[in-house]
Image: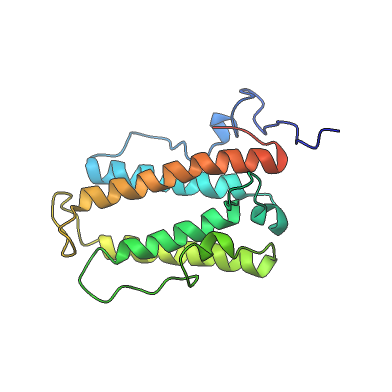
Amino acid sequence: MNDQPVRWTQATVYPDMWVDPDNDPRNGDGPAPDGELATLMGYLADYRATLLMKCEGLEPEQLARRSVPPSTMSLLGLVRHLAEVERDWRNWLDDAEPLPKLYGRRDADFDEVVGERSAVDAAYADLAREQAATDAALAGHTDLGARLEKDGIAVRELLVHRIEEYARHCGHADLLRECVDGRVGQ
């Protein structure tokens, strides 16, 4: 007996895509953004949206499922992890005391995931709050070459690292989602 989910997509024109390009919320109309900062922020916004798209339509138990054993990763764990990472990035902005971990000990963002509606809602709220706080903290740093106080990291490097982190985890989310219910796509 094969208990693997059947591969599927909601796209009708391109069967290997998540959604048809005309229905993809990441496809903006109009010209591309002007300038490096706007371009980087656009990529970050698209990867953030991709993560949420990969999670939509699933029940709490499905979001919490560790679908690629022996990994402890789950889609809900990724949401929690990225909330934790957003908070950690704010620690790079100044020499203040580091913000405490959202979920306690190291790796609790993955290890302590539970498939309950309240946990899912809390994780999404944490992610939105931490993204907004990190964006607000960086809003005053429009010179991408400027070095931030802590360790002298450049604003550009911090933004690119944020994009890289989301991009890498969106790749994980692709595989996790496909293992949960077979849905594939861009």
